[in-house]
Image (cartoon, rainbow, N blue to C red; front, side, top):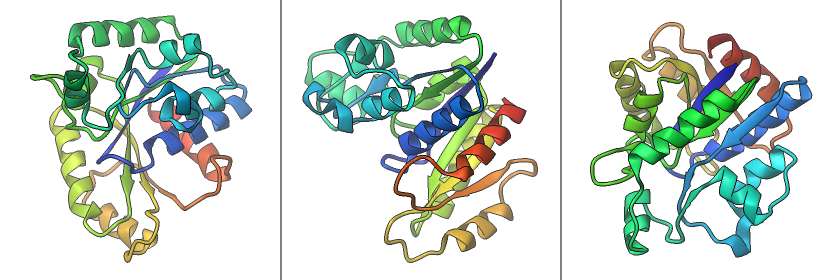
Amino acid sequence: MTALFITATGTDIGKTFATAGLIRALRRAGRTVDAAKPVISGFSMEAVAASDTGALLTAMGRDLSAGEVDRMSPWRFAAPLSPDMAAEAEGKTIDFAALLADSHARITAQPDVLLIEGVGGIMVPLDDRHTVLDWMEALRLPVLLIAGSYLGTISHTLSAVDVLVRRGLKIAALVVSETKGSTVGLDATIATLRRFVPAGVEILALPRLDGPDHPVFERLSGMVLNVA
């Protein structure tokens, strides 16, 4: 059994797009894939098809029923805010112990490949004490880190890598997702990152694509399965 945690250097970087492409590539390779995005904010059931939850369900060949949505994303909040703030807006909190129990149950139940997608970036708060980083550290799964190619991403990405390494988390791969309209070239960004990330961390360029069906995801699936 292989389990992987997908996170990013920030919000709207391309985390779900990469996860959906990875799901499709693994399924084409004959692997049995389960995926979860346990926490999501900015969610509306009326627009489920356009949501991150909907994108992952579609990649898995599942329907967008209320039951499937609830299984994929049990902690859903309407406000497009950090999870702690979105939950507070509804008079709720995220029970961190319950979140960990849910994640561990998924890991135990999955016989082949499990992908758990986080929410926002690695330091996004989940409640008044815990961040996504604490969630990842508790699970101890290999991490797939998604970064952008926008101006400023090098500092953001190296900071994220440093934090993950300091927490003792294995980075399965670093994916640099091309940012639309960036003034910095994708190849130039990766060339700079290669000089500073720890040896052994694979870096993959993810160009702008019309859909998540591209040979780049076959390469990514091989990279993460070799590490995870």
